[in-house]
Image (cartoon, rainbow, N blue to C red; front, side, top):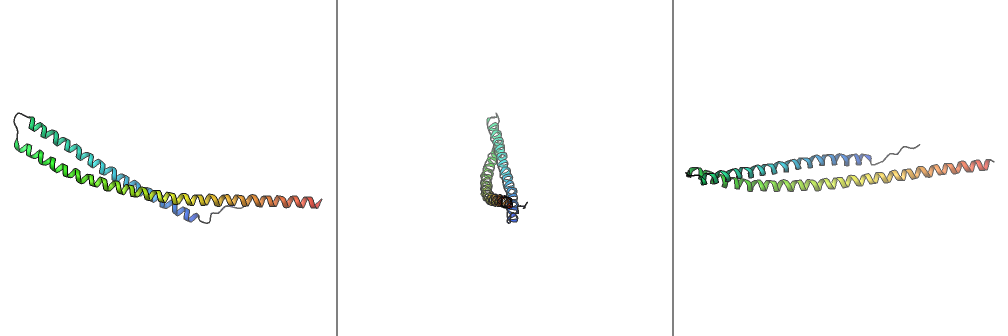
Length: 147
């Protein structure tokens, strides 16, 4: 029995390897995006803490002007840091989307080559069946003629 050999198997293997690499790059981009989101959440938590402390210092019986100014400056600084971090989150999201698109493209390419392999295998099977039928016909013809 003949063995099926796909003549473009090395290309399919290359496509699978490229997909594996792209999945790793996508995972790195997703981790970076998650890290940037965590940094932003931490900044919002710090801002909430500064807001609370400023409110407490303003609500106390004795207002310490130095403390109030410190927390107001801290609020301004943290707002600026939050804006900058939001920009970083947006950049990470865009990079993640770009990696997602690259991964989709590589996956489509690999699937196309797998379909080609399946098609070649189906043709191979049909050829085997045709050869088997031809051999059976010849055997039947030989037996009929030899009688």
